[in-house]
Image (cartoon, rainbow, N blue to C red; front, side, top):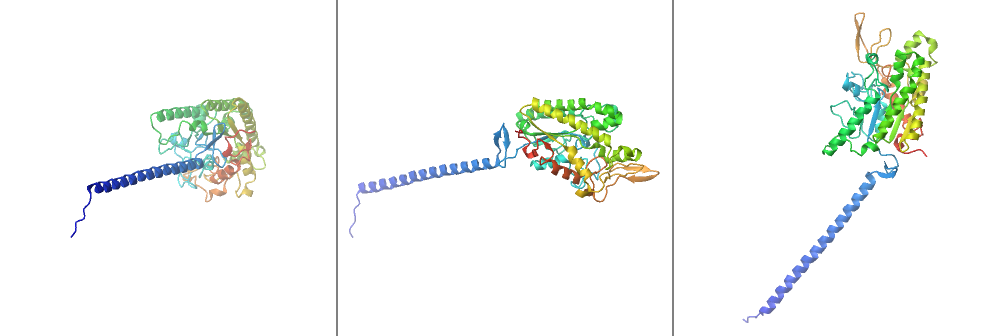
Length: 420
């Protein structure tokens, strides 16, 4: 058998070729991996850019943020007011509203003076925000998207002991402002310390919507402790204090304001029915107290003048004045057309010689009388003789949020735009 001889130099050559081929393959692999990684980074970057362009707001007008649909992006709402917009402040501070308050929507008491939602709830929903937590409610609250400083019974001007005895809130509008200032300062301080849970970002304060619905109790206070002439004469001072708070909010960075005027307080069933029984000549064809509504309209006229003055003074603010009076009076005067019963009848509470408040019980001639709810609250405009029902609040919200009753006529979703 012949042995085949292999030259050692040939073996070295083959090994050298094999090593070279392996190095070439490794080099090519590295190049391919680097190329793939670059492509992946580019793709991820494109995806992120697209996501941000779709999901994040765009700054297009005077620093305001807008969604792709063109509507304003308010990250939060800060509300100031009375029982028309209270979402639990009075209940947290003084006494809890009992069942059947809240039952129609929440299935339990929610701190709202209604059987369900109040108008501020529908406003938040329209803006894609959660319901506002009451600033005074320390249990389970979330302030990421704003806070509610309203409390039932609040006034613009400060009250005295008589008014407190009449169950008005001592937390007047200027005190609500102080609460907001403390809330903002503490939020910014906690943010600096790295605490962000359930709190807004510092930049949200200047981009938020500031809503105000207050003044009704100031007029009610006048009717209770003054003559009607004195109540009318007090209006300039009340609206001046209101404007002063708006200016101070502006100094805190607020720029977009949504301001409600006061409703037809002459049509509050508890008051109107009592006066109608004693002085029928003082009520109109619906049963509303004419002089009370006239004073409410005068308050609204002067409030609107203040808003106009504020527009001239706060040049980069956007102030929307909302005519709640007209929206509510339309509902009351056309109640049956909109599926409601007698607008001066109310659902919850016992009427008659002995009025029993909604959710309460009282002994009358040795017999316990309850202020129970009617069987169908949705048929009533008034829930408890003072406040509106869930169904009425929904009707009112649908009327005002599209701008039909606003000056300028803009929807709440465009309340960051200055009128041309």
